[in-house]
Image (cartoon, rainbow, N blue to C red; front, side, top):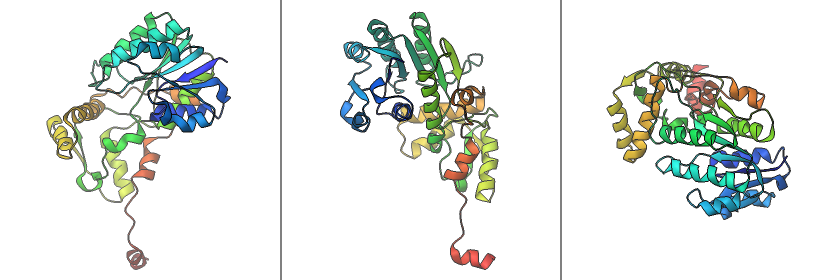
Length: 301
């Protein structure tokens, strides 16, 4: 196995991927890319070769990708010129002699044609550029992250109800750790060449069904209340969320109802060899029922 490089070494997904790789691959075979290598000192101390590079600095990418066999290209942040950054990375990988590029895209349904603000157009461009590059590729279409579910289901939902744009579409969000394990599988195994996978957690649900599960956990009804898209946008703005971010989050929540994330597969489970965490167990752990004070519990006994 040749050198493996993970971009975004200081980001959540990239850092987790390198941590899991260290459990299976000798550190001398691993490299990480970061704009600020000093921020990845914990990985460097464990022997990972942290290389400086910036998606907007083509020359830095060519230098960083030298000697790399497989490259995990973690997608750039929304609200940036993702297409230009990803094209730089793909072109630099080819110039540096990288054999296989794995790209973390976002789940989408081409037949529905729903555009998720800030990501869909650049994902389509990047996937097309990767296929046309002549490089061996793997495309991993990521779902919504369970770890970030509070952005869509805020803790105040128990008191206010689950207020989201209407729609009966479903989503099957996954933990970043499970997705990182999927990255590791593709980086360390053969048989994933020129494949596109749609990754999911183990359970799909609509927001209506999620409200029902929250009701069970809470022990009291948590109403599912469909609202107009504009009203949902305003709820973010009233909490101080910047306008572009509020529009981004609203588009994702509305996209769930419209079916943008309804395609469910067992691709992730097959990659990692175990059942990915499902939304229900995540909610039970992170949105616990309200426990009565000790004196109240005594009165109930």
